[in-house]
Image 1: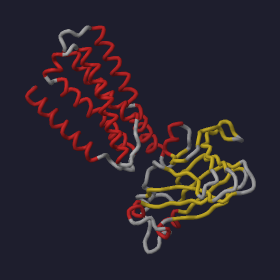
Image 2: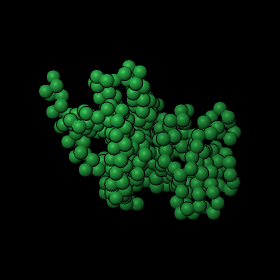
Image 3: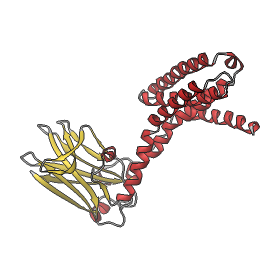
Image 4: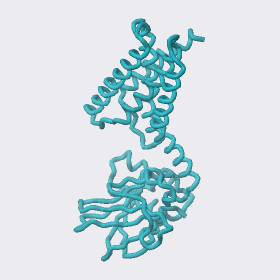
Length: 307
């Protein structure tokens, strides 16, 4: 069996290097992005196993080997993140932690195979591997859970009954709180600043709206006077062909003090692009924003749903 395991490991190692040189995946699907991030765990697990097979590594005391490879992991992981900076990406401590998780898991396997290993230290290694795995896989587990909930709750896109739903929204300043007039309702408090455009967008949602007639937003506002909010909707074809203003739905609605109910007819959304119909089976963006406000504006988003 080992005749096939190690050649396969070398092949996987080469694939990891090629993927690293490729530089990553740009996907709008968060599950794919999280799986890509977990690739750091797999890559450093494989690379650490292979380094552990080198003859001079076998001659090192196991504790020296563990310490050396952990330091090497931090250095290599940091260097990789430094290269990402040159490509225009951010330095990610999460990726470095994932690198350490993969290396630690491999070192646990190496330690188990060493004849001088002690049961107590093996338990410590296993415990460390489990703890690091729980930390590294937490975001993936949360994403899988929220994806399942998102499809189960559809056609409700968000209602903030679960705090995990906050990750479905993009905004500069937001937090889940109780509604100002009803402590039993969870709402998303959104603060809009005085920039030219300030708002929020629905990042993750079921994109097929073909079987529904309306998009509904329920928003509470405690400030006065009224404020105008712009709502924008577009499909994936719009994203792929220049983001033209004439190729999307864009309407303005007034938010008064108290509860506001915005009902957007999807028939109007479908006909909004010039010279074509919007593909309601592949909606890619939903967002609302205010324009050049003299003071900070605050709204409380309760639900976004289809009916």
